[in-house]
Length: 283
Image (cartoon, rainbow, N blue to C red):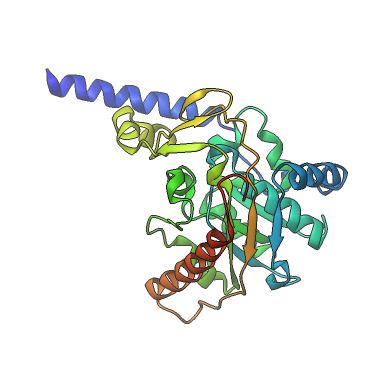
């Protein structure tokens, strides 16, 4: 009896997962629209500057041409203000014609109002898109920590937490491209992130259905208690500060050695940014 119920639950989960995945639109690299970016950039950058008091440092460390892998820590839940701010700053600095893509979970791209991110170069986070972007000479921004890091508790704001994921090192080595760390702080202060909800996600089978290992719990506007963050939230106007670090050549390093080097450099830089802050949100 128990085995029969387990098999039935498994079939139901597979059916739901298949239907949901078919409903999630695929993000294509060719959907990036330089004309749209050019028209919207001034207003959005002004909004980011006024609302988040955005400060992006060290863009000069990014090679001026050719493929490059940008590796960032990730904050702010599904709204991810750090990504928006950095995308605007990168495009302002290098111009809209330079190919620039950001990897994101397909479910994020399907959230209400966020499909527009495809026009800015945001694509599905999968190996095929990452490899194609680098082969075509684009700058590519990846967040190894993914949903695990972006929903970490707010009191871990100054911690780089990739969860041991090393795929970004292998990607840089396979394509022999410079790896540029990008460190940001402030995103985890745009709401009170309480828990990743990993146990709840496993209980509900979200990993099998949506490739989600977390069901985050936060306190955020306008919902109050926000479970899942599937509808996003209104971020508090926390000051966002982003620091681009000098590029690293990891081509000759062991994967584990390269991972520790990158995370160590990023953690040191993030701790320095945290030390600059006087108060949460205010910065």
